[in-house]
Image (cartoon, rainbow, N blue to C red; front, side, top):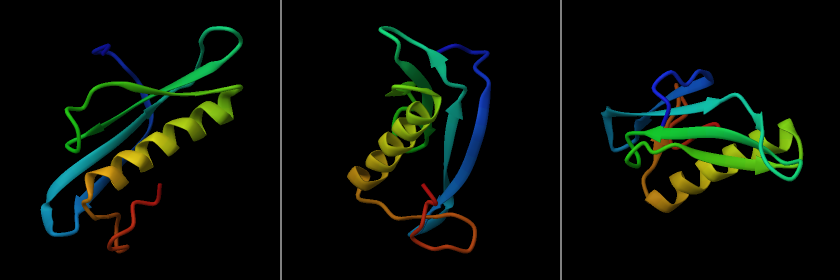
Length: 93
Protein backbone atom coordinates (compact mmCIF):
# COMPACT_ATOMS: atom_id res chain seq x y z
CA UNK A 1 0.00 0.00 0.00
CA UNK A 2 1.17 3.49 -0.74
CA UNK A 3 1.99 5.40 2.41
CA UNK A 4 0.78 8.65 0.85
CA UNK A 5 -2.64 7.31 -0.22
CA UNK A 6 -5.27 10.03 -0.12
CA UNK A 7 -8.71 8.96 0.99
CA UNK A 8 -11.73 10.89 -0.22
CA UNK A 9 -14.08 9.24 2.27
CA UNK A 10 -13.60 7.71 5.71
CA UNK A 11 -16.00 6.44 8.33
CA UNK A 12 -15.43 5.27 11.90
CA UNK A 13 -17.60 2.40 13.09
CA UNK A 14 -17.82 0.82 16.54
CA UNK A 15 -18.23 -2.85 17.36
CA UNK A 16 -21.79 -3.16 18.70
CA UNK A 17 -20.70 -5.66 21.38
CA UNK A 18 -17.67 -3.59 22.43
CA UNK A 19 -18.05 0.15 21.67
CA UNK A 20 -14.39 0.78 22.52
CA UNK A 21 -13.34 -1.20 19.42
CA UNK A 22 -13.18 0.99 16.31
CA UNK A 23 -13.01 0.09 12.64
CA UNK A 24 -12.15 2.70 10.03
CA UNK A 25 -13.40 2.39 6.47
CA UNK A 26 -11.28 4.29 3.93
CA UNK A 27 -12.17 4.81 0.27
CA UNK A 28 -9.74 6.38 -2.17
CA UNK A 29 -10.10 8.17 -5.47
CA UNK A 30 -11.07 6.03 -8.48
CA UNK A 31 -8.46 5.74 -11.23
CA UNK A 32 -8.33 4.35 -14.76
CA UNK A 33 -7.15 0.77 -14.72
CA UNK A 34 -6.93 -1.67 -17.62
CA UNK A 35 -9.09 -2.52 -20.63
CA UNK A 36 -11.12 0.67 -20.13
CA UNK A 37 -12.12 -0.25 -16.58
CA UNK A 38 -11.79 1.84 -13.45
CA UNK A 39 -10.72 0.79 -9.97
CA UNK A 40 -11.34 2.34 -6.56
CA UNK A 41 -8.93 1.64 -3.71
CA UNK A 42 -10.28 0.91 -0.23
CA UNK A 43 -9.33 -0.69 3.06
CA UNK A 44 -11.00 -1.51 6.35
CA UNK A 45 -8.64 -0.91 9.28
CA UNK A 46 -9.42 -2.98 12.35
CA UNK A 47 -11.61 -5.60 10.69
CA UNK A 48 -9.05 -7.25 8.47
CA UNK A 49 -5.30 -6.78 8.36
CA UNK A 50 -6.01 -3.45 6.68
CA UNK A 51 -4.70 -4.48 3.31
CA UNK A 52 -5.50 -2.30 0.33
CA UNK A 53 -8.11 -3.74 -2.02
CA UNK A 54 -10.01 -2.47 -5.06
CA UNK A 55 -13.54 -2.23 -6.35
CA UNK A 56 -13.64 -2.40 -10.15
CA UNK A 57 -16.21 -1.03 -12.56
CA UNK A 58 -16.91 0.24 -16.05
CA UNK A 59 -16.73 3.88 -14.92
CA UNK A 60 -15.96 5.96 -11.83
CA UNK A 61 -19.33 5.47 -10.18
CA UNK A 62 -19.42 1.72 -10.69
CA UNK A 63 -15.87 1.44 -9.29
CA UNK A 64 -16.98 3.29 -6.15
CA UNK A 65 -20.04 1.05 -5.91
CA UNK A 66 -17.79 -1.99 -6.32
CA UNK A 67 -15.66 -0.81 -3.42
CA UNK A 68 -18.74 -0.28 -1.23
CA UNK A 69 -20.08 -3.72 -2.13
CA UNK A 70 -16.76 -5.34 -1.22
CA UNK A 71 -16.67 -3.44 2.09
CA UNK A 72 -20.23 -4.52 2.93
CA UNK A 73 -19.27 -8.13 2.11
CA UNK A 74 -16.34 -7.94 4.55
CA UNK A 75 -18.68 -6.78 7.30
CA UNK A 76 -21.20 -9.54 6.57
CA UNK A 77 -18.52 -12.23 6.47
CA UNK A 78 -17.00 -11.06 9.76
CA UNK A 79 -20.19 -12.04 11.60
CA UNK A 80 -19.78 -8.97 13.78
CA UNK A 81 -22.24 -6.11 14.19
CA UNK A 82 -21.15 -2.50 13.99
CA UNK A 83 -22.68 0.83 14.85
CA UNK A 84 -22.36 4.09 13.01
CA UNK A 85 -23.35 7.09 15.10
CA UNK A 86 -26.65 6.38 16.85
CA UNK A 87 -27.54 3.56 14.44
CA UNK A 88 -26.72 0.35 16.31
CA UNK A 89 -26.13 -2.59 14.02
CA UNK A 90 -25.92 -0.31 10.95
CA UNK A 91 -22.78 0.57 8.99
CA UNK A 92 -24.44 2.90 6.50
CA UNK A 93 -22.60 1.00 3.74
